[in-house]
Structure formats: C-alpha cells, structure tokens
Length: 574
Image 1 (cartoon, one colour):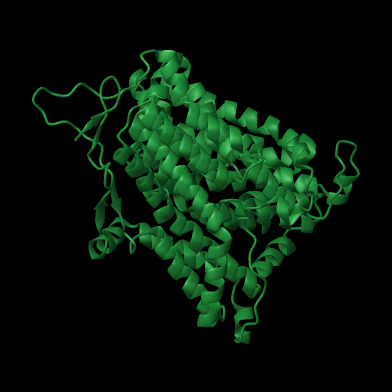
Image 2 (cartoon, rainbow, N blue to C red):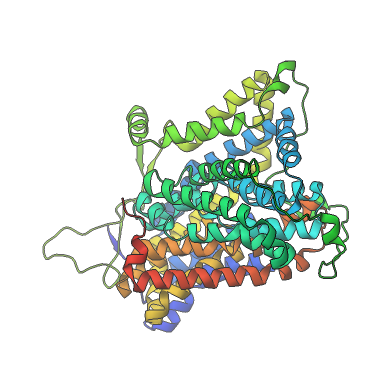
C-alpha cells in the first residue's frame, strides 16, 4: 500500500509548520543547552520525529520505523565505517610515535609564529580535516600551537577559525555524500557546486587567522605566505571537487598547500620578526589561565587514543612520518576513480529493500510536479547498498593496515588498537546513526516539505537566509553532516518552489554551515580540553562568535549573488 504525504496535516499552515519543526527544535534545543550528551539528544530528537510522523502526519507505523532503520543503517555504513577506520589510522600514528615526529618536523622548520599559524592551523589542519574530521583537527592543531608557545586560549580560538574552509569536504567528503543521500541529488554535481562556493573563503581564511591574532600589522609582513597557502588550497579544492568528486578534496588541497607554503619559504622569508612572547605582552592580548582538564567535561572524546606501545621492529622510526597520510590519500584517490569503483561494486555491492518504506511513500504536489495522467505513481526508494568493497572506509582500512605493518605493528597489536578505537568511537557512531535516522523520518514523513513550503515565503531573500540556516544547523548540532541531514532536503524543496537551483541551495547549506563550526559546543569543548583551559568555553565562544557570524553573512551574500547572476554559479565548468 502506497502512502501519500500530506503537507498540511492540521488543516492550518502555521500550525502544521510549527508541529513539523518540533523534532528539529527538540534536537537543537537539547544540544544548545549542553546538559545532555550528544547521542542522548539525538535519540530524543529521533523519538520526537517518530511521534510527529505517526500522530501528526499519520504516517504508517511500518513506514516510520523503516525510515528510521534505513537512516540508522546508512549512518553506520558507509559513514560510521569511514570514521572508525580513520581514527584507527590516527591511533596507529600516535602509538608508533610517527605523529609526534610529524609535529616536530613541521614546527622546527618554521620559527615565525605567524607562519606557524598558517602552516599548522590552516594547511595541516585542512589536511587532517580531509581524512579525519569529527573534532580531530581542532584537538590536534590546538595542542600543537600551544606547544609552539601560543597561549591556550589563543590556540583554541585560532584553531576554531581555521577549521572552517575544509569542513564541507571533511572526513573524506562525508558532508557532501550524506547531503546527496538525504536530498536524492547527484553527489558529483553537489561536489561541483560546493567547489564553486567554498574556495573563495578558503583563499581568505589564512589572511583572516593572522589578522585575528595580530591585526593588520602582523598580516602586513606575511601576506605573501597567506596568499600562497590560501590560493593553492582554494585552487586544488575547486579542481578536485569539480573533476573528481568530494572524497579527497581536502586531503589533496591540504597536501598541495603545505608543499606550496614550504616551497615559498625556500625563496622568501618575512622581513619583520614576530614572537609569541611579544604578543603575550601586548595590551590587546587577553590573558588566559590554563587549568587541569577535567576528563568528564568531554564525555564523547573523538581524539582520545590509546597510549604508546612497544614495537618490535626498531627500523620503524626511520619511516617518514608523512607516509601513512600519503598512503591514505593515494588509496582514496584510486578508490574514487569511476572505473575502479564500478569494478569493485560489480564484485560485491548487494542491495536490500528496506521493509516498510521502500517504494511505499509518495510525494505529492506542490512539492513535486503534477503526475502525468495514467502514469504509475512515483514513489520514494529506500534501498540499502552494502558496497563493502568499494566503500571509502574499506580503502582507509587497507591504508591503515599497510601503515601499521610498515610502522612495525604485530597483528595482535593491530587488533588490540582497532578494538580500543572501536570502543572509543561508539558514542560518535551512535550519534551519527540517530542523526541519520531522524533526518530520514523527517524526510519520508513529509515534515521537511512542510517546513520548506513555509520558508519559500521569504522569496528573493531565500538564498541569503537559506545559507544562514546551514550555519545555524552546524552551530547547534556541531556537525556539517548533521546539518545537511536536517536541512538538506528542505533546501532542495524550497529552492524548487522558488525556481532556484536545488544544487545551489543544498550546497549552500553545507558551505554556509562550515562557518558555524567554530561556535558549536562540541568543537569548543574539544579545543578547550586539548589546550587545558577547561572552564573557558564561554570566553572562547565570545571570541569566535563575531568571526563566525561575519563569515556566514559573507557566504550568504555570495550565494545570493550566484542565485541572481547564474554566471557566478558556473565559474568552474568542465
């Protein structure tokens, strides 16, 4: 039996819109309060979504449960599979000592703190975001900056600002691939559109962080380095997203930016000299008092990893510390090639129709065009594709195992590290599954369409406010992926109602969302714990809020210009 969605279940547009918004308000409100763990808030939000779907929108029980199961399954595979294996690789580099070697190598080569800030927070942070994400870049680079001599509060603030440009393509492109799954839009076209929106801000961020630290006087001496780092990152981000897809955008951009930056330093150095000590004595610099971190303050650590192990092969210390990450980038590039992906899918990619929901739900006008007379009803598919061999997470796992072998880990040590990593990321996996389940229930019940029809009333201003909707979603959920799950389908529907490109607005949700990353509670807590300033979260939030809102507004203006002058949305055409 096919169930047709109803976008005004209460017979009153305002009331129906208010009811449809309840699951989102519950989730965002609980996260904003910060009194519950994220996975608990996600489960409560899922419960609210199921209740609204069943009792307000009259969705059949099998369909509602099927939608939740379908979303949870997709959250665990392929998204959770990627997160788990990336953190496994990171754990191996930490335990082998190669991560410390990489940090020392990076910091020894660049003595000027402004250059350190660009290299560590922007270039290296972007590279880590491309493969890990989910809090890892913030914790890693904030700790590195503090060890370089930056004050803990400054290290937290600057790292949060820097961790914006790469987020939309972070974690092997998870935000974009998830956005495609939620909206039903082509993932490659979404990648292309995001690659025409975000690079402009990738160019700006290196300038922005130096200015935020030392003002225009500090920036005046190192603008060539900021230009090279930002331009190389932005160019590769645009090219890879438009030619290859979302998977290795930030990994390639980060590596290129590091190489270009270091190449510049071989022929150029700033004429003036700056030190962290001088900034610490500056009247404009706010004092900070690091305290002992409280382990209970971050109940869902994304980067806490097992301690060092005793490796039995002494030659591993001669291994280049970049090798595991270069190996990861190479394998992901191969995994993303269409011929390789097609071949691996042919070997093993079974599909499973989700019971209760597959082809059981039908969207109706005005959300979709009126059906052709006598044509069969167009229903919403819900097939779970278990492409375990071609999945990006499998390529990451292979890279991790190869790296572990090269670094001297024994099979038993690899197994123990993997199990320990799995134990530590369980809350994150549960959060992802609950978020995806909530998003799918909202989508299949038609609640997202009800909200989209209401937002369509903003008319010509929608490109601007739709972009800020993505910013708000990330600010409150802590994840560009989660914001895309919540609002991606809504952006698509509203854009179609207004005659805008659904790809433009869906991508704008993700690109606008990255500017909310620096003010979300989870990122701020990760940064404060990594730098030892637990209890200063409010001060960090106040320091970064201006930067976050200003950048989000600028993204909104850019998307509005793209919407009004379509030539701007086709700046990169292949």
